[in-house]
Every structure is written in C-alpha cells, then in structure tokens.
Amino acid sequence: MAGAQGTAGRAPGDSARAQVVRSTAARLFEASGYAGTTMNDIADAVGLLPGSLYHHFASKEQIAAELLTAFSAALGEVADAAVAAPPAPGADAEERVRRLTADVMALSFEHAAAVRLRAFEPPTVATARLREAMRLPTAALETAWRDAVDGLRPVREGGADPALLRFALQQATLDAPGSYPAGRDPRELAAQLCDVLLEGVTTDCPPDAELDASAATRAAAEAVAGWRAEAPPAGPRDRDTIVAAARAEFARRGYDATTVRDIAAAAGVRMGTLYRRVESKEALLGEVLARYSGHLGEAFDAVFAAGSAEVETLDGLALVFVHASRRFEAESCILRYGWSGREAASSPFHDYYLQTQGRLRSLEDLLARGAAAGRLRTVPDMALHIRSVLWLPFHQHARTGTARAHAFLRAALLRGALRA
Image (tube, rainbow, N blue to C red; front, top):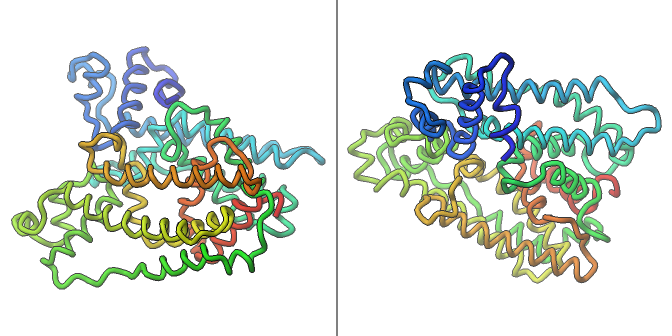
C-alpha cells in the first residue's frame, strides 16, 4: 500500500536511513498494529542491529507519533486548500465534492499506517506527544466538507440529509484502508463511492410507503427486535462478567494489545479465577464474535429469505445495519482493524472472516440479479462500497437515531443524493 512508500517515509532533514526506518515501521504498523510491532521487528526488517536503530529513533512511540503527525498535517493542508479556494460562480459543485473525496481517500491510503494507529486507544503508558499526535484537524475537515456538500443544490432543497452526507463521505474516506483491499487506486475508489452516494444504486426506487410495507423490511424489523440487551451478569466473578470485560477491552485497546491481565482487571477478578472460567484470550474473542455474527447472520438471512425484489432487499439490509452498528458497536470496533491476517486458519478472526465473506458474496449475487433485471445500476465494486456505507456509525453523528440513518440510506444509497 502507498503508505509504506509515500510521504510517511520522508521528513525534512532526514538521513536516508531514517527515512527507510520510518517507511519500514509504517509498513509493519499497517500490517500488525502498534502492539504487534516491536523495535526488534523494525530493526530486523531494516537489516539493522536493535542498538543501531536507536541512533535514529529513541522509541517505537517516536516513530508512531511522527507518522500520525504527518497524516494530520497532510489532511490539514488538503482541508485548508479546499476552504481557501471555493469554486467560482457557476462552477460544478459536484466536482468539488468528488475532488475532496478523492484527495482525502488518497491521503488515507498513503498514510494507511497512521489510519490503523488511530483505530484504537493509545497504550496506557503512552506519552502526551503520542496522544496529541492521534488527534486529527477535525474542525478544518468539517469546514471543508460542509462548504463542499452545501454547494449541492438538490441536497439543500430536500432529499438526502446534508449533515449525514458530509459524515458519510468524511468517515468513509478517512477509514478507507480498513474497508477496501490493499493495492487499489484510491482515486478510482473515491469516484465509485461518489457514484454510489450521489447517484444511488437503483434505477427506479419505490416510494417509502412501499418500502415500509415490503416483506424484507418486515423481516428486518422482526430480526432486530429480537436483539435484546444481554442480561446483566449474576455476580462479579461470573463468567459473563469476564466475557463482557473482554468485549469492552478488545474494542478499546484492540485484540492484539489486550492482555489476559487487562481483562481480569476490567472484570474485577483474579487471574486464577479467570483461567478457571475461560480457556484463553482467543476463546473469549471467539465467543464474542460468534454471538455477534450469529445475530447478524440470522437477520441477514431473514431479509434474503423474505423473497422481496432486489431494491426492497437492500432497504431491509440497510435497516439491519443501522441497528447493528449501534447495538454491536463494540464488535464493530474490534473488527475495524483487528482482523489482519484473517484469512489464515490460525487467526482467531478466521471463522468470522469466512462468514462475512459469504455475506459479501450473497450481496454481490443480489446486485448482479438486480442489474440484469434493470432495477439496479452497475458500479464497479458496488458491493464493497455498499458494505462500507452500511457499516458507517451514523449514531456517532449528533446522536443520530436509527430512523434518521435509515432515511438517509434510502435517500442517498438507494435513490442518490443528487437524484432524491
């Protein structure tokens, strides 16, 4: 991915060796995360003795902070340039949105290591420098997106919620390396994503009343109604307490960075008690993901089994996912960057990987049938883009409720923000 070779590997005044160390560390951080990368790993990959590495960088944290700072600076420059150069009267507002989408997604791919480094909380022992480096120029980015999206007249006059359209574009582009395969052209992906959100995926979307009455929507509503909050654990030493603590710690720290001792401390149990209740950290992750994937898979299958047309089925899936991203927020965080190497049978994420790949194939088949029947448009990699948009945490934007998020997906994803 470009992050290992682009600006992440350069800094003014650097020696050539320091540039190599930084770009090599970026590649390792991107692949294995912060906790999964050591200074010895970096030294081995560069071909240096560990002691020689410290002549260039005092710590792994210093390298990570520099990578994060470079990403923030690059994003700030793009945002400032977008705000400082508004389009001339009569200029194409859509082109402005597409250009900003492409610029931010390209930077996210170029700085993919920094994107992954931001996926979880910094280590407890992290310095103020690393914590500060993880902050993005949020205000500048939001201003750039607001200026760009507000220029879209159809959005201003009705249809797709402009605030959620800004949120969707910003989140999808910033998190792109975690949603799309490595080695893809980010500007090409950005153009496709804009096609999906601005033009929609349907050729003729039914009105809301028909969508609300569809068998797929009824199946989705029944499925999510069955997602009840799990009963509170029976006591501080109960096994359910340990599983709940593991779920929260995996989401906060990332699976690799979480230790059994962290889980025991969060659950309020001794290590001996934990090991009498659970087999291993891997077993805990397996249980958390199995519960989650089971709920999601049942809802997914119910919507497909309802027998509705392709457009109604997509709308039912949208309803499932806006509920899932809220109800299973912790699991979404765990999986955001926690499943690198997921295709390997030895990975604790492997079973979930197989299940989610099966759901992706079902979505691809649905889209192919809809396109063949003339009910859906054809956009390259449309299944990947739809999955990326469906998983966006809309509830994190100004406490957006599921009804508002679902309405946005109908207006933008199904009908198109510029067509709605």
